[in-house]
Image (cartoon, rainbow, N blue to C red; front, side):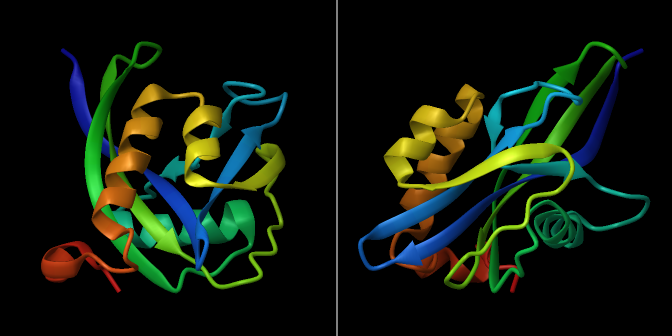
Length: 154
């Protein structure tokens, strides 16, 4: 029987600048899954860790950045045929401070701070592209406006 598991987080790391968002894209290294693919921060939820705690930890581990503000954006399912699991990713947007000096983790070989349009073009996964647009629609003014109370984690 196929299992449904909420076991991963996706995090769009953003520097909100006066001239528009800068979105972090990470290029996967040659020794893991999807070599060469550009993605947002992605990682597993460990043990009984809450998704928001996993998001902050993964941002720190994969980029060396500290999250200033965190918003939940959505969740999306995908099938992992190797394990027979439908995995659900909880998706967040994490705002970080300037200058955004990134120290990439061992899973990645490169990074880039991109405009929204550049990030949409570069991300490998179509769902990442559409969710990034949704996140921008919700948070483009710097907060979630009338839905701040349900989207802002901290």
